[in-house]
Image 1: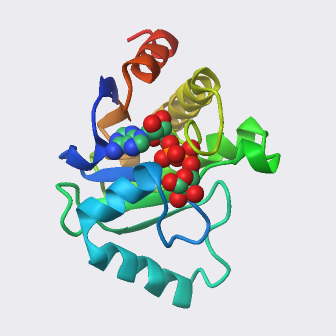
Image 2: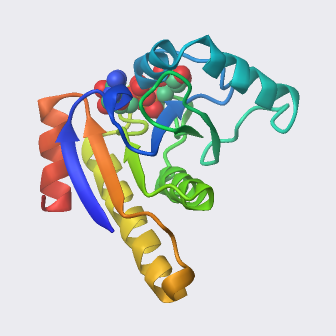
Length: 179
Ligand code: APR
């Protein structure tokens, strides 16, 4: 599994799945959530509303992940996950690790071969980019080793991208990932 660190706008990535740093309502917001909804079109909001009407009537829990189609985005799927909000006292790194692991599991379950992550929780939710990068690095390494243990029937995931919106965050992720 190859890991790429790059600066850019995740809505432009032509990978199979892009990860959205959503909130529990799944009904959109600012930051990358707002950018993904704007680029995907209103069908994405309708798909999220349908999830809230059916399997996620109480919203998406912190650390969980769920997929929808990506509609007008170049990607095939959007995997929505809710990162921990430091301003709400959610400071447990295990919650953030769960976002990365569950998103990878959902992507693998879809048969995705490539996935792009933003820096989950490193914006409005107030986490330090270095800690986000360290948690993400460990979670991807765990997933990669658990897949190799599973052997040939493991995940089809070949590429994991981290798409960062600023030069500063990109430099932080490159330093942590040794990229
Ligand atoms: N592409 C890639 N990264 C982006 C983009 C984009 N188009 N837009 C923003 N980012 C970056 C931010 O600069 C930050 O580094 O994504 C990272 C995550 O920031 P947020 O989007 O604020 O996400 P988060 O900190 O997890 O807060 C989630 O914000 O947008 C609301 O509805 C969302 O309530 C939720 C909260």
